[in-house]
Length: 195
Image (cartoon, rainbow, N blue to C red; front, top):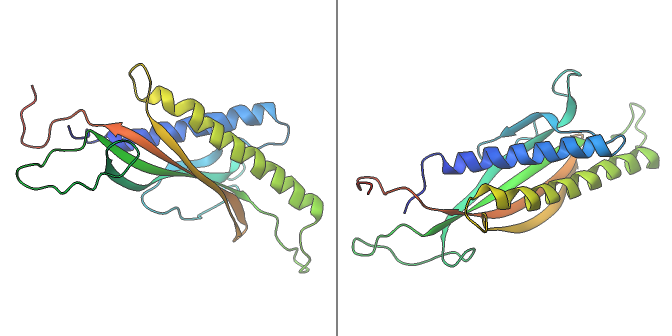
């Protein structure tokens, strides 16, 4: 069966909400840790590093949280890419489609002063602490949230991918977490009548 038209977008919205809630919970538990950035969105294509400072004019936590689709592919068995040749006689949609998502969280990075001096070790240490707490929070959020998003007894299947530190660049530093998520088809193909 095929995917429903909104299946992919709905998944990205659920992941965004899950990670944002986890960041807020962590901020409530860890002194000095910023919560979910006020700029949190699902984005088309690659993430633009639009803002890692306070894009909300002091009305929220600074930074930028985004979720984007990296790729989508048929899989059999999950998460192995299915490279079966399709034609008019054997054109069946995959039983499971895999979607790779990237969750990107950016925060401000210490930069050189107006006199050209590098940031102090204390400033770098504070930024590293925030980054490390963010990294663990994003990782844990996906592990705890994704299973409950797929229905069924066992929940949604997923494979955690690599997490990497990105930046510092342009005053931003952060983490990018990849995850491959199984999306079982449940809609008829276009032109087919539903039973």
